Each structure stands twice: as C-alpha cells, then as structure tokens.
Image 1 (cartoon, one colour):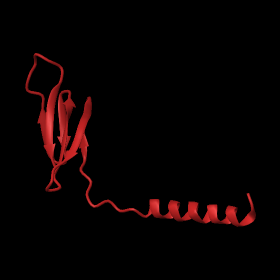
Image 2 (cartoon, rainbow, N blue to C red; image 1 turned 180 degrees about the horizontal axis):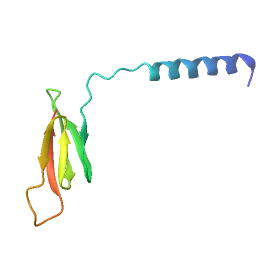
Image 3 (cartoon, rainbow, N blue to C red; image 1 turned 90 degrees about the horizontal axis):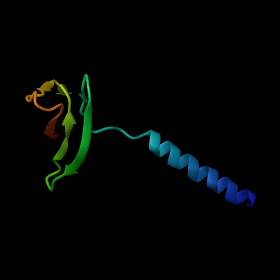
Image 4 (cartoon, rainbow, N blue to C red; image 1 turned 90 degrees about the vertical axis):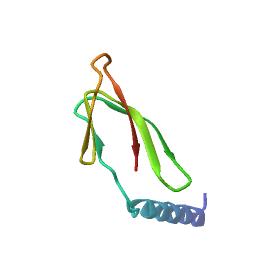
Length: 83
C-alpha cells in the first residue's frame, strides 16, 4: 500500500471515529428491575411511536412508574410500553 492510500485510510478512519462519538441522544428512557427483566421486541409505528414488549419477574420500573407482578401462579409477567 503506498503512502497516499495509507494517509487516505487514516483520514477516513478518523472522520468516521469523530462522527461516531459526537452523536447526541434525543430521548432516553430508563427501564430497570430489581430482579429479572427481558426485552423481547421493539417496533415503531407510522407516527413515530415506539413500542417495547417483554417479560419481568416481581417488579419493573419504567421511569417513575412501577409495574408489579399480578399473578402468583407463574414466575413472570409481561409488559407492553409505548414511548
């Protein structure tokens, strides 16, 4: 590889690296659990609304809302969240 190709490759790499670290988040939602929580799927509708589905055990906290498992007959419960 000649010198000019090496320099060009380094420049392209640096431009890609710099653009990847300068990204900003438009929104971030905090979702966590004291026990087990598994995200199964995320989709976006035609209006730009995001939907997340999954399962959790005991409790699930989405921002400031707490979901509690309703059934004692099984270990997990499901959730569907719209963002």
